[in-house]
Length: 125
Image 1: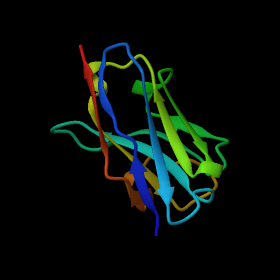
Image 2: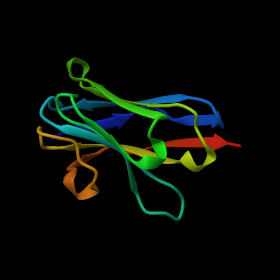
Image 3: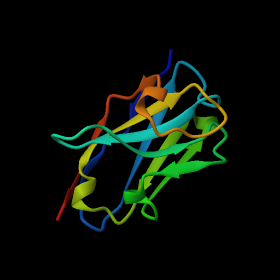
């Protein structure tokens, strides 16, 4: 069993930056692809970014490309999401998730078996 705990999000002005972290306990993350998803009020959960188990490949939804960066430190069992140039439309609850595959990164929620509790990110205009 893997428990995922996201760092506290927060309130930030448009154009600002925020870094989320997600720490895993219970099992090493080095054999899991990791992802970040988000859910805004009244909307479905959407894929944001993902990274392969080794960290060698990453993927992003088009709306965050060039602004967000996903990274991981397997020695610390932690995955990060650096968010720059934030926009009001980035406001959502952000979730980290773990998928039990090593080969690549994945953008479908059903591919992930462990989820964090979510953290609120609010971007004011």
